[in-house]
Image (cartoon, rainbow over all chains, first blue to last red; front, top):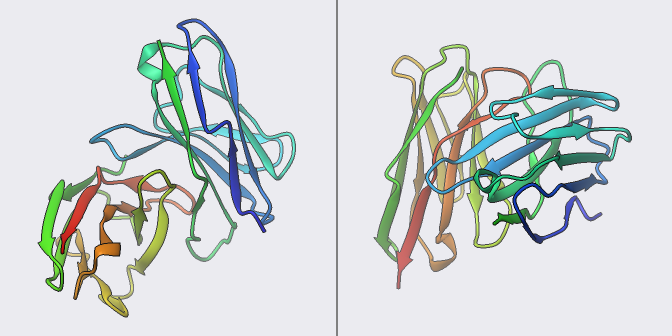
Amino acid sequence: NAGVTQTPKFRVLKTGQSMTLLCAQDMNHEYMYWYRQDPGMGLRLIHYSVGEGTTAKGEVPDGYNVSRLKKQNFLLGLESAAPSQTSVYFCASSFARSDRRETQYFGPGTRLLVL
Amino acid sequence: GENVEQHPSTLSVQEGDSAVIKCTYSDSASNYFPWYKQELGKGPQLIIDIRSNVGEKKDQRIAVTLNKTAKHFSLHITETQPEDSAVYFCAASPSDYKLSFGAGTTVTVRA
């Protein structure tokens, strides 16, 4: 049971380049999330998904797109990278319950540097 | 939306002493408050959580208290050890799947 995995671990992009970050979970979780972590700002939600084929915007969605074609995978895309998108990106997943909050499990992160 | 403030941003304690981190939140509808620990180079990991129908919860050396009237909650770590050195995040949940995080506290335990 690998939990939540992220690919790649580290990437350097030039301004204007595109890339896709992959998140995979093997816990059969319904919900999946993408966060970015910047110094002094905690974790901010970019996009999330409450099930296969569904996505929604979080707190800071501009410049990112996501897709959830399979329940276990959640992709984060940057179509035209900007230096402001230099950050550490974390994926998380959780079960869905109607009566209580559930623990979010985080991946190890992807460090992205945009030059 | 929910706004979570966390203090202090850095905390240095002597091994064996206690550490306290405090958070405030703005949305009175929030009713779930988890704490995450992030070690260097790793993703955050849940260490304890509390729900709004409980005022205090303890798990070995860590405890969390919640004051819903004042909209603040705190993490207490007793008998600190070197392995407690990490970044700690508080969070509040105003909905059934979203978390709003504080800015984090870097805790250093001095031997």
